[in-house]
Amino acid sequence: MGAFVPLPAGAQVIVRLQLAGLSVSNRLWFTYDTPPFNLAALQGLADGVSGWWRGNIMPALSIDLFLSEVAAFEWSADPPPLSAFNSTPMYGGVNEKSYSANVAVVVPFLWPIDVRLKRNKHFVAGIPDGGVVLNTVQPALQDALFEGYAALVDAARLFSPTFKWRWRAASAYAGGLARSEQYVADVQGPPIETPFLLGQRRRRLP
Image (cartoon, rainbow, N blue to C red; front, side, top):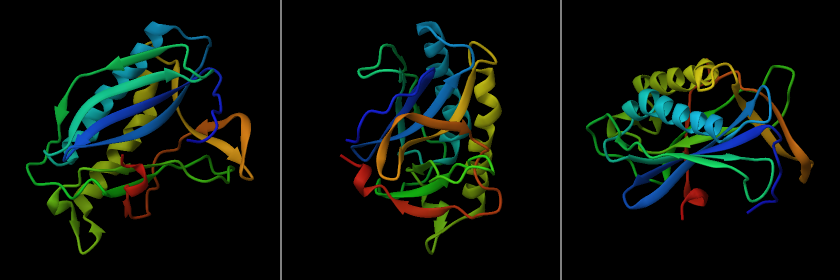
């Protein structure tokens, strides 16, 4: 576990899933336009991310993958002063067996063109059997994940309360040292012309 690096006026959101008896998760960062925000706003963020993930990401993934919860945490202090949860369950929408929980599609997120920092990314588990051929992510899955993540840029602005939340890329370290607070900028979406690659979640599994 690295050092806690605060994100003033911001929140960390964790998408929690189950696959083959293992817990897998993905993290997203958001900031609020007119801080401070309250518990109702944080709940709106948790509900919004849950709805976006269920509507845009789960339909492209194996039925073996189970969405258990979306958790949102105010990230100004440790422990988080506020937390909110959405536990609307859902299975993946593709009726095919999944690759192991260790195998994932790597979806990177673009910083603005003037920022040169390590990309945030998701390791998306629950890949349907037909989604990969000879270690190559197939076009249908590539397109579905691209469109799904690209949709979050605008969807975040409509989370309750509307026009307050922004999806952000975050950097907690500079030169190997923890920053005093996270550096953030608007995510521009996933790369348009770069094929998504396969990666391993081994270090991210319990």
